Image (cartoon, rainbow, N blue to C red; front, side, top):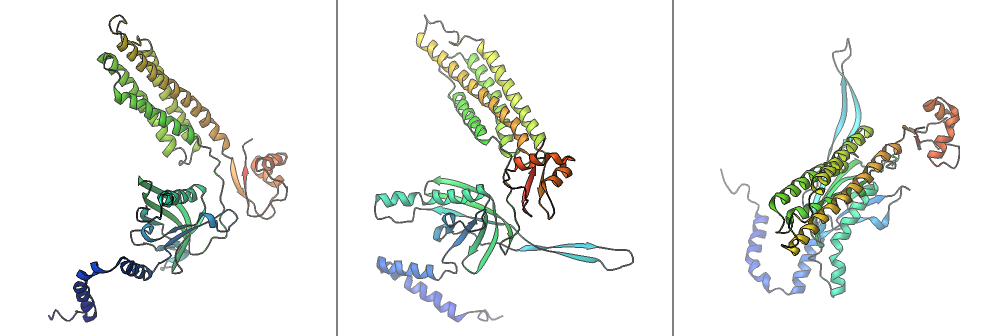
Length: 399
């Protein structure tokens, strides 16, 4: 077999030319090198980068929130896309061949990864340098804001490729303010902007802020555990405190983890709230156990003030500090319990998409078997007219 059969003369000459000229490239001026880099960039298929255009509730693009990933911020890996065709195959008696229903195409979700990096941006002065330093953080906040608001987005690579969908998940790895790794997963709807999608407001008012505060206070408490208290604290007493803190930390971690990752996801909200309340009760019992076991001890650790005054006060200050943290956790757990109980009240009995011919009275008869409850639907949805808009979503409240 002749090894020259597959040899491409043109590419071979170009490769040889590059190797011959490479030693002389270092003699190019800065402007010449910059020009060569610009030419290389201009030859890129997607000079305008990847654009994420959010659409507000009005159905129009939100120009101020458009995200453009260009140059170093472009996705690092190849863009993988495609989809499936939804088919249903049925066999019927007396027919040897199946009947196939073509239900339509379904686009696969898309994930992009890369880095928001401001380090290579050149600034003319310190003020502009600080402005550029915020570049990565601003991009990260823009992307996360689109996800949080649940905006429909158009993802496009110039005029060559585009899809419509939603940001379903994004995660960020912050090395520093000017260098943030990103991973963004898009829930793809299709090629065209959907004309019949409805954004339902999130009525599950999950107490995430209280949960965050609870997690922060728990971290502060655990830091006290790692510091191990003053050296004058008797080892047996210190071990008892540390063991009690560990028990409390484990119980509270179960609460914060459940609220963060499970409560907003499960189908049966009532059951999940009951589970969360059970975890809260368990955590409060652990704290009560700490206060019962440790609270009855001498706060000075048993050191007589006549022997070591400073050690006695150091021990007392440490025990008081831990006790204060316990009281803070107790208050937050109580607040969380109240908010969790209120969550189920925000969930409607049903949601109804208005059809032609629907009226408030007919909906009240359908869901309550009593037309007089039409005003409950009217008030709950904050309507300003009794004439219903076909296609709109109404919440049917519990009464």
